[in-house]
Length: 339
Length: 267
Image (cartoon, rainbow over the protein chains, first blue to last red):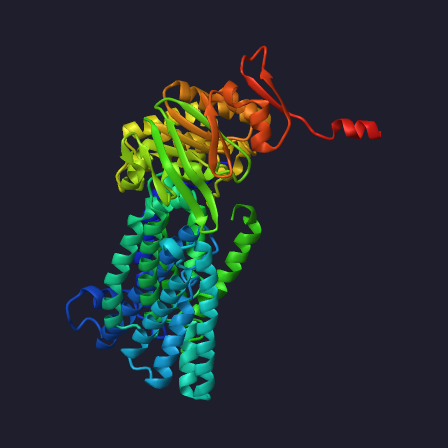
């Protein structure tokens, strides 16, 4: 059976680039206050003038634009981390959270919210430190004698450490004995782009760019790794070096994304999958299209999150799971054999 | 390109040594078969030659270079390996898999060069998998898959080809196809070391057989010298009828079931 649609690769990249631009713009126009297209354009590109209402200008420039950009960055970072993790574990069911990052970040965020009143600086910092701590513990546990890391042990250690950190979060929630901060914690865990601002964007943008670039550099090595660790060695790729490099890069990518937007699920699992069905498993194509598609997907999910129950805002993680889980199950049923 | 193995010892863990002071020299263009019971150290020896495992004592040289001093990439330009089985997590096409053999020859971001394409086409041809090129590696039969991996190894254009029980799971026709290709490569000047269970097939394909037992090479020499009833008895603990086949002109080994007559008597 020839794998369908590989020729899609190049077209898909350009289609996705166009789609990203459209999505960003749609994300700016749509919201509790609908902003007319011409007004949005003027707010974005025109110099200060009387033709645009000051309110529109502030909403577009200070609220919506950083929010859609953050959505793009977080979605791309999660999707690319997902590709890297699935490639590293040679398992399409792996996700960026497989090493306990989500649980670690949640525990760190809960700590920051409950005991440091969720200050704008401490919250992402707490989440990042929690995420990094979880991965470091997992990696430390999985690292056997003679400096080799067993990928199998990594997964098991990830499950266990994730459970441990979840227990920490639950315990912190128990200690907090309810209240507003509790709902803050829960809302954070569900994930959302509500905290978006220019600081978040300017911090995440370079990290995402470097991180995605770093995964892209390993594209060919990830292909080789699909031959198994020894198989990769036999075509000249050192699997231990690759493993360390990718763990470091994806931890940085995922932890930074999660620190800004909470533990948004399913983007890192479903997007790489769908893209693999469209362009095949070659990571040199898979990584760029996943980055674009992941960004697009999260921007639209956030548009839905803002509008479905407007003026109330759904956590975007609810949307991604609502869309992602059934779609994933559909794939599992229809393409089960080729997973 | 020759392989020199000197005083190599290796243990996966302290209590169970897998190789004990092994010496073996394979000259360039020679085909050597490693035979012996399960757990005798054949696979371990191949993995040590390939550089995947580092011996705790002794050295392995590719020509004059100790393999420990070569990067994986430099090893992969000179040496290729076909394993008994290989996991494949993703739906790469046969051509894409064979093309992975060019990885050690190509820059990280370089596109396929004319030379790459030529090597891939040639490997697809020799391994007889060209008609499968657009199929998924996971959609071809076990016998075809082994030839795909052989094709990938050949696309590396190696001087040394290592094969770890490559035909163990294959039916007779695929065994013969596979070994024919390997034999032709050996005749074409490639240095070949193959771990193999089928002694009769080994005798036809190899210039020399090294019989292994319990982490040591017990005896090495031409197939007719090594494959004798006493040697088979000593290494495998099995009675066998051994002889030179009148038509093939090579040594054959026919294992004999010990209770054949006993059962006939009982019946």
